[in-house]
Image 1: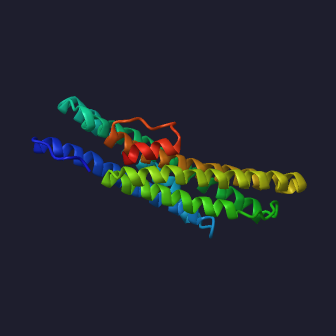
Image 2: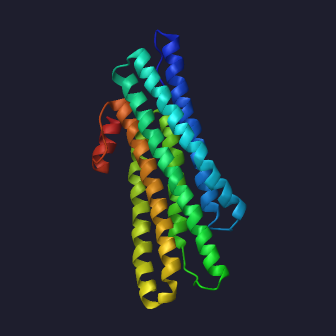
Image 3: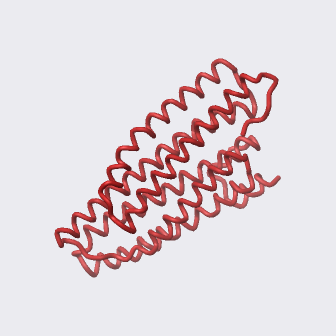
Length: 237
């Protein structure tokens, strides 16, 4: 959370912006959890809830960005305060995009369900998808907690954890290509699962981005695109 300032009004502005970001993060977590629950049990009502909730996330992104712009215009912040506000705006974008990926997951699972109802599909093992889904949820939750506490060490660890999701995605892709080559009837369903796997991998990426912005706010260093070992060193220095 923001540090204390001489101006209580400035403190209130920063706290409100941070709180709104975390509120949006909670809604995105719920959105993703609902979408991923469809992997276990399909429920058309859950699909509709996920699709409808996307509008609220879009609106929150606009509202938070407007709040950040207003604070910058009125307070003319510098140093860490400015970094915090810029990070909030960037993290809001990442959360909105993570919500978009959840919507994509829900729509693809609905499509797969319809294919199977028409006896046009073939069952595909999705162990890697389930594993990466749990990882992505964990990283996002951890990234939001790290942001709330401005915990750079925890944030750096999460960036390394995201690599595990990438490995699961690559493993699923390799296996699926082999399966689709051997059984052409599985291609349609397989491509849908490929989109779902990629969406989950992207959710992990957006969560990783949020974690990187924690280091940026606290340390003043842009650690995007740097090796994990270097990021961890920067975070703990």
